[in-house]
Image (cartoon, rainbow, N blue to C red; front, side, top):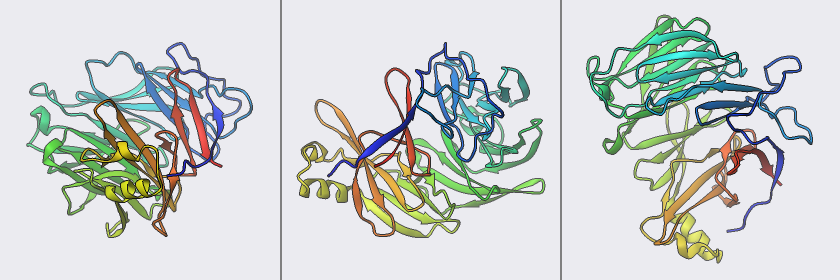
Amino acid sequence: MTPLPVRPIATTKPLTRETEPSRPEASAVPSGRNPVSWVTEGTLFAVDFSAVDDEPVSPRGVFRLGDRSHDPYGAALAPDASCVVVATQREALRVDADGAVAWRIPFPAPAHSSIGLANCAFSRDGAQVWIFRPDAMLGRGDGGDRWLVVDAADGRVLAEHALPTVGQGALQVAHPDGHHMLLDVGEGQDGVYLFFGRLQGEAISVHAYPWDDRCLIDLSPDGLEFMTVGHGEEDAVFHSFPDGTELCSFAVDRFLAQAGAAGDANAGDQDGEDSHVAWSGGYLNATTAVITIAGETEDDEWSIPYVVDLPSGAVLGRLPSEPQLRGDGTWTTVDESGRLTLWELG
């Protein structure tokens, strides 16, 4: 399969603990595209690629989250890069750019130590924070997990919903309409459950999709579709939002057959029972997506991100490395030195 031509748009300085933020010229609010966040060594970097020049880009914000090696957490950057919300098994808190904790929400104490990763995500306008609290695995509450909506400004809990899940972790994706949030709750070998919700008054209106084997990957930039990968990693499916109707699907065998027919040098490595659709990829833009096929040989692991055209179903080619997609036709990668690079096709 032909590698697609790509070109770098901008790159950052190496992002390490010693990296300092740039001085904002006017406002921390980026123009247009949301900032990119990158977490390493207990530090979250907010990078604004909206105005780039020939110089390496400095992060707009640097948030020191502290040593949390014994306290698993999820972190979310506000759309304007002004703050970060951190959710752990024991609490949620907002950390501002100066390091001050603006608010803190204590959770009920876990009854025992267990897997159970909290997750948080901002609404598109930054006004709310949605939090998945893994109660069931930690032996607290009524046997299920909880979904919370919090006022991002002051930490008030606006609504709370009891979920019928025993989640080990979760993924949330904010809908561009500013109201809906998609939630994927993974139960390990027992499957995965997918919901969408919206705040209505003092309650969360929740819709559950009728599957226990589809993992949420991404939401299209226009909000009209979403992408899932099978829990068994056998295929990628694209659905209409909100009803979940299947629009198109791509099975792993299709990519293997096409690579072999094209005489791909790596086709031999892709053959075999270990080849699968990875739980990664997403929308490059509204009509183009990335599906990653991965596997392993006796000597190594491999992965190939393929670009597909959704209206026609055509496989267009492959990218040189796994992308962090932004939905606007660009994506980022990180190298071993901690440099983020922004790319586009061409």
